[in-house]
Image (cartoon, rainbow, N blue to C red; front, side):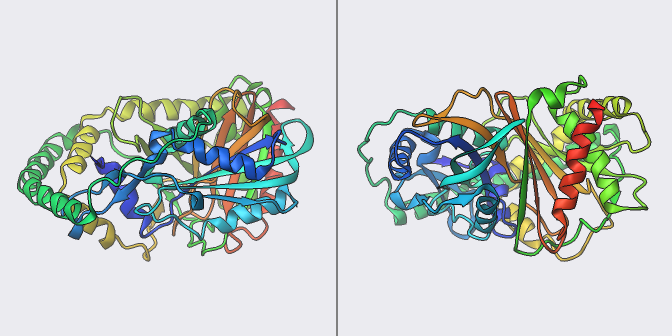
Length: 434
């Protein structure tokens, strides 16, 4: 057993209120074997990936943070759909999966295989027919970078049948033991929380002042339960030809598409960008969300790109601010029962006056294009950041090899005309080249 880090426990508890499973989608050319056989082999490979052999154990009464415990992958965690379908209908099916969230105390991941799927995007080349593999994974098990590594480990793992491990600690003994440990920890953690809170107050004056939030738009409403997914797959060179990194190039395109979609009155827009931390940490969710201004006042794309890049660099540097470091240390020390209560007490129904960004952008490079599915080469990979009661539009930026996929996640309640937005976004990708 391993006690969960504070940030991972918070992600798990938050999933009880806001669906936050990650959906990592990989498009492959047609494999050399049947899809059912691919599924059988992937299940065998999963048993050799440590992170896929875990589930969550809840401590009674939230007396302590949950624990990671061993769990042998089971056949019901791999689902196969051999219905012949198109890429767009496959996205509809994946969008419907959002409503079927994992229960990580039973299983922290699930695998979905679809094929054959026609009209899979292949960058600037013609569409192809292949298969789609979706790894649905609890956010508590890892942030975007870690989940991407888990997926790579799955595809790279040896195809060897393994013998299941022992039954582990009996449930009743585990409950009693973790409950007792939590009770023993509480006094020291409570005192530490107060002491570290005082440190936050002491260094608070040294903190960099936070940027003002952005006014709510029509995007910042409760999206309901239905999802609309769209994906554009681009050759990496197309994005970076102007000299900007991939993430910056996508933000520039969003900065051109969003005002046109929202119409008049958008004088100031920003995005909530997930930024990974560079420090070594045992925390599986090692990132933070920052507000990045899209600098609509800069008409020239290269100048806008420079300003956005400077903001991202400044946000990364600000993570070392003494006040922010002190605040993180408070969260790490807070007793589990208080942290869990705080998440449940958070009011999700009252709309804030401002938001960190009018849309969320998550960007992850998934490495070299050297993974395959039993002979089927990788075509692209993408993902779909979760929506929330005040975020009805999110973007995913995921690269593998020479291809980058830009995804859009929304709902019919927020963007019934999502294809109009996609046309504006594609025009934004083309703008720097004109």
